[in-house]
Length: 491
Image (cartoon, rainbow, N blue to C red; front, side):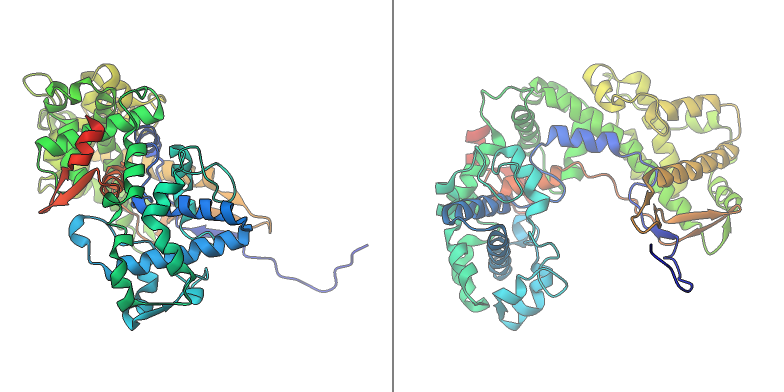
């Protein structure tokens, strides 16, 4: 029998942590992005890490390395790649810095890197995870067939050891060195994250990404190829500097993608139009919620937040508000850029985003076919989705816009509470983890931090930088252009 002697204090009962996606409006857009860009995610911006991990998988298999030995080799090789890339100025080509570069910056500025020390996971190393940056790329590498779905890097069916060794074998030599001297690394710029397009490993990955003309458009490879053909066609016909900002309006609005000889024949075109239009709904809710949380200073009555929203709006009926919004269809019947027009206006944020929600909700009755399917998704009529939003505006049409805002604030506060409670988890020690930045006690609100308001990533930026690293596209004088190699692959 166990006897407890004396009092003992329990752990704190509630752990309130900053949660992600407080309104849970992002699911459909994120799911569609995964379907339309398989093999690339928002955390996989570099082509060369696909090749590096394939190289490690082949090396580990050839040498019969243990899991711990494979981990160490992978981390040392990633340190070498980051160090080489730091010595080579490539910001003009539009690629982000190599992973871990910021953590290594102090050592790199000092002119040398102790590889064993820098490659140790933890606060003093280049990465926290013992597998380096493999995990963010793992699912994408399995999707592409670069690696097998195993617990250690293992060559997949599409791996090409000859290509990755021809391009990156020198990294293994650098990784074995006890110290990397920055001045010496300037002789190895062919290993930089930006140099894959001119290397066998980049050409191999480009072929995987772009698939072949025989790929079934309904397969993951076929869908990815269609997405790549869609964005590269726009790059050939439009000036694209900021990928998502410049591509999204061309896809979502007007008649270019439905009339162009290339894009009109792609099944992915309709899906992308619907998804990008839906993302305006998602972004509007995120911005509006972020603004509402900003109104909470100290202990703040929920009614005061609702009043702040109401006071930012004109004193008109909902119908009068709806009547003055821009048109959502062009004379030819294609989507007009109403959301884009409103986002570029000087309206105060609550009025602007409420306007975006309203014009976006009109599209429920205006879109058709695959575009409408991609816009609405499989879960029709759920809270805060376009159909729900359209219904709320219609029901409230004769009432005051300011009263509508107060009711909407109450709805959003309840929604955020439900989402946080649905995500809450009881830990092994009996404490409760609650992911939320906004708490309510007896009608009073307080926040632990501000909410983000950025749009949900569509993976187009990351897809472009991966394609650039594989030599399919290139940034020339500030704009993205398709290379001759890319044109040959895409037809």
